[in-house]
Amino acid sequence: MENGWTKRIEELEAERDGYRNGQQQLQDTLSTVMDSNAKWANDYKVLEDENRRLREALDLVISFIPDGWSMPLGYSRLVAQIKEASNE
Image (cartoon, rainbow, N blue to C red; front, top):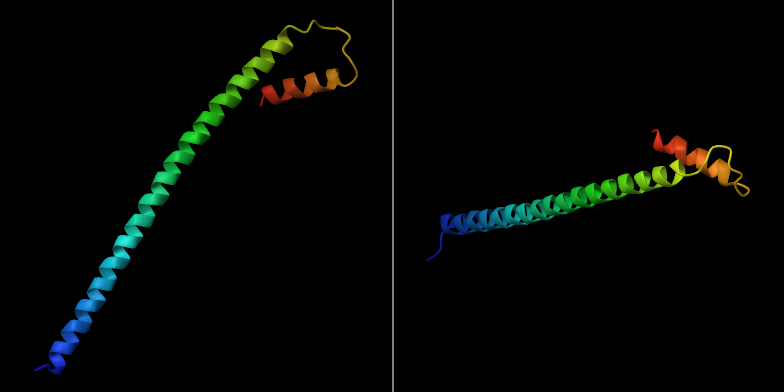
């Protein structure tokens, strides 16, 4: 025979189970976000390193261009922009 207390206990147990499920979903989501952030941080580091290597390569190429050397149209400006960007 079911009374009011039994029904209320079942309701509270259902609420508790729903709360636990919600907590688990939140933890799963947080774990996914943390994993993604770690991956993005690693990708950012890789891109940063690649950017540094490209700048070093450009600096090396520019260092071999003799001062006063006649370059095709627009190259002087390009070299100046690269030198300016390398100093940042």
